[in-house]
Amino acid sequence: MVNIGRPMFQVGSNIFELIEFTATKASAVPTSDRKTPILYGVNVAKVREVIRLPTIVPCLTNAPEVLGVFNLRGAPIPAIHLAKALGYNDEVVTPASQVIVTEFSSRKAGFVVAGTRRIRRVSWDKVLPPSSDAFNTITGMMLIENQDFIFILDFERILLDIESRSGGQGTSSMAIEYNQPLPTGGGGAQPSGGAQGAGSSTRPLILVVDDSPTARRAICELLRSMQLDIIEYTNAEQAWNDLNTAEAGSDLSKVQLIVSDVEMPKLDGYSFVKRIRNSEKLKKMPIILHSSLTGDVNKDRAKQAGADAYVGKLNRKEIIEALKAALPPSWKGAS
Image 1 (cartoon, rainbow, N blue to C red):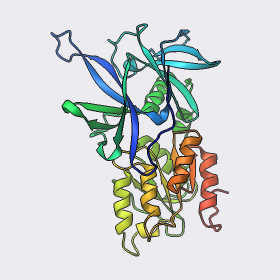
Image 2 (image 1 turned 180 degrees about the horizontal axis):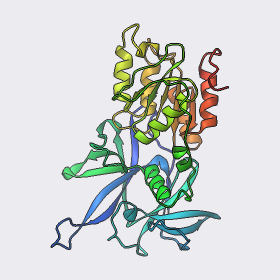
Image 3 (image 1 turned 90 degrees about the vertical axis):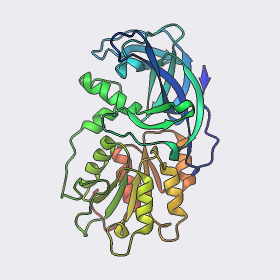
């Protein structure tokens, strides 16, 4: 068993750590029986520990990648065959397999892999966003030695896909949060590109930064239901550049609060907050970080960076409370 400790790098350094592992895919050449290992990674901040393959008790499910549940110090943890979840049906679970035990969005899951390789420390500015929406289980990719790629997996999306295919009867509450219809209340910004235009000038204007289309759409729908106008960005680096150079009278100069994800290619949320706090023009801007990364360690890191609040991703109650604390008292949209 490998326990994952507290990260040792400085908040705002734009550095994170990932655990490398492989999933095996059969060759695309019909006449070949060769199998190609593909290198993947997951943010260490989502990993509690890596363990040997435990005894897995099968359970009734119509999701073939869910192998069952196992007992981890008295807690039942779902076991998911990661290669099968990625569509690679050729990888066999053996006694030598390992389980990456993750915790995010206040829940745990065990992802069964052939084996882990190493922990790699990297900078977010080396991570490229996926080149297409077809890579919906990948949050980023990075070129490493020998011209190989590491693909950083979106474990939240993987769980969401599993639960949607199993009729929403999975172990995660996030599928309910993402799929729950939200009132659209009063208009606001409409999708029209990387940064969206603002709506009525009489309502507070919120800047939303999130690289995940699913999460960004959900948080924007939630904010619109609270009578808030929105400008959307898909990455923090572009948001920072535009905020920093915004001219007086532009929509960006009227932003009253920022809601930002933490894990993003190029520039992470903590570093985004640090840049704003170091800007004479923007340093007083209220900032709420929202993330699936849970626990006191991540809350402490958000506080060190200078965020006004750190809330669970799409936790409606926490978001409303944070908005009430940050926006002017005249705003009544959440009452």
